[in-house]
Image (cartoon, rainbow, N blue to C red):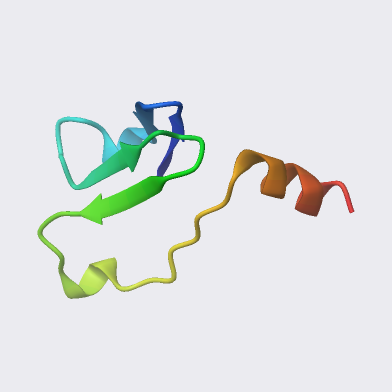
Length: 61
């Protein structure tokens, strides 16, 4: 869906700024929040959040 780099949000194209479906907030270091607007049944999913160092550690095992 996207990521935070410090406090700058970057969304994948299908969740771009024109749709305003999602919002990523936080400092991008210790705190992050995913906000999904106008929820529908098709938004039902398991959402995963990871810190950069965690992703590196998992993929390098």
